[in-house]
Image 1 (tube, rainbow, N blue to C red):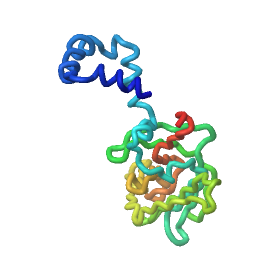
Image 2: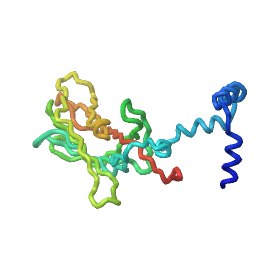
Image 3: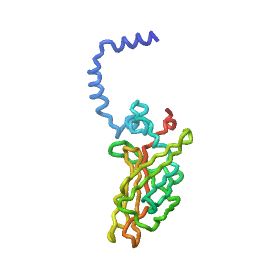
Image 4: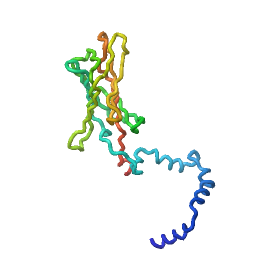
Length: 214
């Protein structure tokens, strides 16, 4: 080991590294682009790998809300005029990765309707009806289940005989690390909206470090 270190010192002693860099740039790197060199393209692609920030020491804390979602229950309305619907993510659905403006990548899933119950199935929601989304995560390895409640205190639902056939409400956001987009449908003859069956949910991208060999 010492002999190798000594040889290295002989090689690098007195070298002007700025000049070396200039010469390499002028004679080597300026003539190579990732469009022509496969190896350079692969090197550049390393920094686009999902989870590379964990290797570089720049990862953000693990988000519990990135765990697999086992069920989503939505309550819309209040008192006797309330509807409860259960949804889930379709088996083997990997979702769609989207880039948020302020919180990195999220995975967006279109949920599958499981069941609906309540006295307001064909009754229009009040204009100030609250909406609550309860997401239960697959946290079998934890002693306490991980559950998140997102609340929209006032849905501000329109009423009238000329309202659009559908409207969308967002509950939660990147601040809560969970976003639900819920479709509501016009109730024929009631001049208002009811909870529909089109629901999307977005959660922070889950990075499995084991799959990266880390």
